[in-house]
Length: 497
Image 1: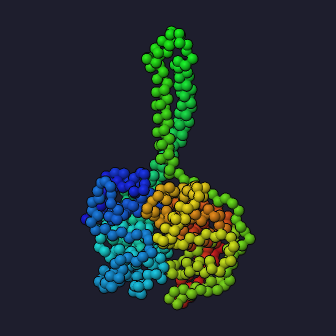
Image 2: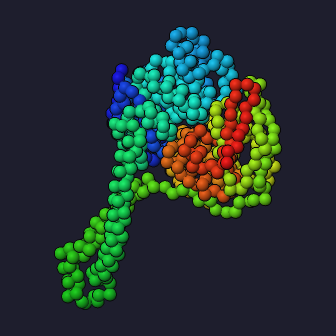
Image 3: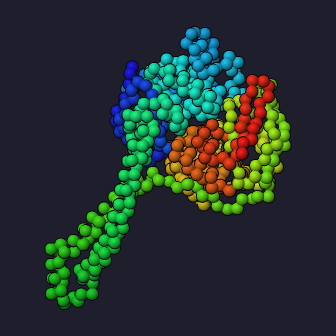
């Protein structure tokens, strides 16, 4: 099987008003194709339709008889994990070696880092000999070294590969075709992501010019509407028989003659045509404007009396009898501390220790690198109980992170990226003085990452964030804590100003 085809495919979620896909046609050839778009644009939905987890309302998918879907969630181990780890064929050994999978990982899923889980998840997926392999955010949680391992493993796949990712380096290194989901439209490019992005930006510039021209035209139409409304109002008065005396038959005949010849209809019909044009133009502008979102603005005062926050020189225990040693570390108001290092170096364990040790009286926001299904359900329940004013403010924040808030809350299966935006927005409503984010760009689309990055630059409190995204790290951090993983029992932390 050398291709996957979609023909006139349509799908609408039961709770949604409009379909997320309407009669789309796509071809996926042998090799890797990438799918990009904002959270909620339908990337994961498209993968679920291909894998038959969802059933399309109209249209068909051809070539999806043997499909493996490697999801972005690493909460639970793959069903075939035990079988894969107990298989001793040449191919199985090659995959375990390629992805640096250790024998001792069997049966200890809960204590593995998310990066280790992802490599194991991919190894199981690649062992399936599928016709179509779909991977959703495969480099989430992975350090630079692990990312190179994953790229090499995915390049070894010989079937129809479909990649969803926000990792620009991976997109360019792996994919030969790009599909962009933008504002309900599907854009197809026979090129890698960066070239497709340039082509799309040229289209977007053209759309911006159209939007500006249409704004000018709409202003003119509004003035015309006002003039025509005044004409219609005068016509109504002119053709009204109210106030005409019963005996004034001559005037009544003149009015009747004007009505019969249609003189009273001309201004009204012209007004209706103009109003129709105005409505159509406004709707078109609305569709274009969806592609332009504004960033988050932080308002309110930052409580500074808890700063600086300091940790004295110490060490903490990690798994596998390892320890993490770190020097005296501190963070002051306005500082943005970027934390990076290899998987398993102790970054998330350190953050847990940091949270326990700091005596922070004012509210601080912490968001873990993964959100469980139970936590997501509790989050949506909390949001549903907010009053109208708070919910409105929340909707605004989500909108400024590049998602349709109402669509998000009405969705029965929100993506992890959308859930993360909701969690960030809910936390920001409380105006925290300290924000701690563990892998904040995981699951988020490129546009939203840029919006979040811009917003956090303007944030006046203290920020600690763990990331493997080099661009995000360099653009945002005012200083860095580098975590070093050693071959002996002691990992370490180095502060770089």
